[in-house]
Length: 191
Image 1 (cartoon, rainbow, N blue to C red):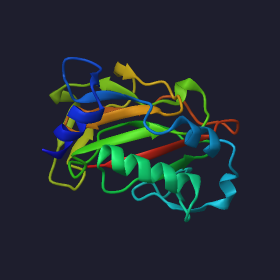
Image 2 (image 1 turned 30 degrees about the vertical axis):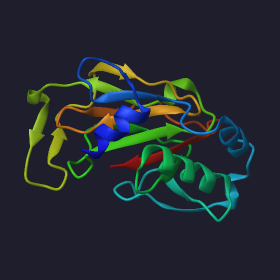
Image 3 (image 1 turned 120 degrees about the vertical axis):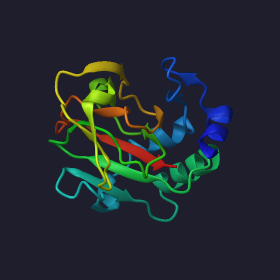
């Protein structure tokens, strides 16, 4: 399994005994992260993120020789993912607890902007009874999205993030809301 290769080579710190959620630290060269946070983000074209077209999240499109292109190259080489998307979460962005659809076998999100620590992704403890299963493309539907027990809350800290092996009980979201002062940018790839 490709995700097992990645885990054995680069991501070693599981957050608990479930062994399906891992901490990533020092994902790319720190200088690239520093340079990106000084860069004028308006130089990048943007597009809507599929399944999130009506949210304040946009995809940043790297251009040749840009800092994001260099970050992308390092992530692809180090983590052996097919591609990397860069998400810019604008003022008002938040994400209720949800489970990714089964087409996402595993995913990795690396924080690269400068934002408040509470803007990290939060994973929740849920049970089979909390999830409705159907025949839609989404397949797994979390029945309640509030008052969930926190399994692990990642701090938003540049050059860190998580690797998650998806499954019916891998609920996650964002408890805080992005403000005008936050620069919440993430590198995201799925496997």
